[in-house]
Length: 203
Image (cartoon, rainbow, N blue to C red; front, side, top):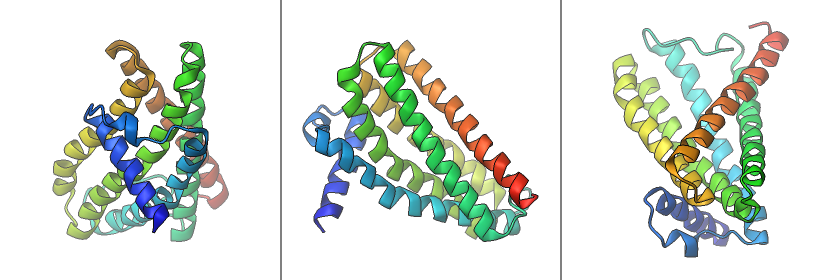
C-alpha cells in the first residue's frame, strides 16, 4: 500500500506540473532516491501499455476503417510483445534525450526533476491512450475514435508540456523545440523496433 500511495502522490505531482500549480515542487520527489524510485512507474505504465496494444488489436478486428497498425496481422502475443518492447525503447531514448538537452542547456541540476517527472508522467499518458483505444475497440466506431483522439492528445501534450516547461524552466520556444525532439525520438525508436519485429515475424 505504501508503494501505491507513493505512486499516486508522484502522479498527482505530475498533474500539478501540468496545471502549473507551484505545489508540485513539494510533491515531486526529485531526490537521488526519488529518481531511482521513479522507475517504479514502469510497474503501472507497462501493464497499461499491454492493455493499449490489446485494445489496438481488437479495434483493428472489429472497427470499420480502422488504420492498420504495423504488425497487426502477426500473432497477438508477438504484436503485443514487440509493441511493448518498442514502448520501453521509446521511454529509454526519450530519457536519454532529456538528459542530453539538460547538459546542453547547462541545466544539469534539473536532470533529477526531469527524470522523475517524465517517468511518473508515463502512467497517466498511457492510461489516456489505453482508455481512448478501449473506447474505439469496444464501440466498434471509428467516428468515436476521432471524437476521443483530440481531447486525448491535448491531455497528453499538456502533461508533457508541464514536465518540460517546469522541469527545464526555459521559455516557450525552447520548450516547443524539446517537445518536438521528443516526438521525433518517439517515432524513430518505435519504428526501429517495429521494423525489426516485422522482419522477425514476417508481418
